[in-house]
Image (cartoon, rainbow, N blue to C red; front, top):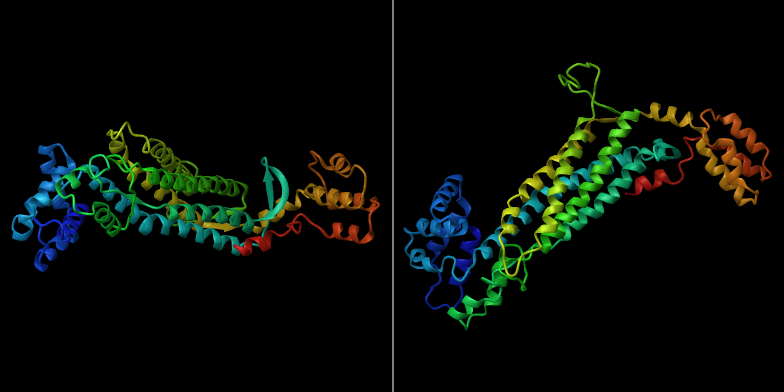
Length: 420
């Protein structure tokens, strides 16, 4: 409805269209009021007309003619409603407006809120040592904040990709060549008029189309959202694991139940809900991205039926983001649990010891540390220090190695976490 009225207003402002005079102020006000006040009852009337026409856009055209029957200047211009347009001229712009508004008002603000939550965790826990786990096994320590910073940096890149996709539109007729337009008014600069309408709706003109705008921008947008979702699925699974390891406790909510039979349970359900919804979203988004740019010849209707699920895909993404934020808000880090895990895995210091040995030319450094530590479950500070004492390296190097603990062997992790 908004697109049809924008096209009608643009035609009325075109001097070369002599049969359509510019609308007086009161008629313009009636057009603007109709655009602003469209309500569920109006939509129901459109749907009632569609039950007869079996065509959605034609139903909108007929509803507009019905609506403006009592406004003489607009009623006299009734045949210029939907003038020279194919249905897709209207629909593609309507979808573009919906996507542009959804992105600006809902999607980007929510994604940025997730990113802000992660940045806050990165800064708050920048220096909190934590045992890393590569292949699920104890590995070189990191900090809790640095792990959150990693995800923040990944998400920021995908948010920027979502933001920069240009949302395009077209208003150029049945096969994209302004055929009917030129036949009726050859003196009108239809490309300029079309560009003005599309830009006025907040979109970017696509000058080369068939009957449909080819949806390439939608594929780019949905792929970008799906990539952001994939980053967050990765986070959901890691957070689920950290809760399982006890690195995070979950804040209790009064009255909440974790299991119908096990009273002690506090389950990481927010991260599970998030992962499930993001998976559903990506299944739909990736199908949309693959299917929508493909159309037989100048037009087929497969895109039309598929496009009706855009809201479903984005709705699942939104649910996933909101569930993740809810889960993040419940997390409490457990430094004592992380410290205990670090202290139980002194073998992770095999890496710095063999690296310093290599610096000073000790032969077979890696192999010697492998023989000492690989598969070990009882490595202690004393065992490592005794080994260090046997090394032919400078005393100050020995002292630096002996000063290391699993909790202090974190490299630049804290600085990196604070920098995001």
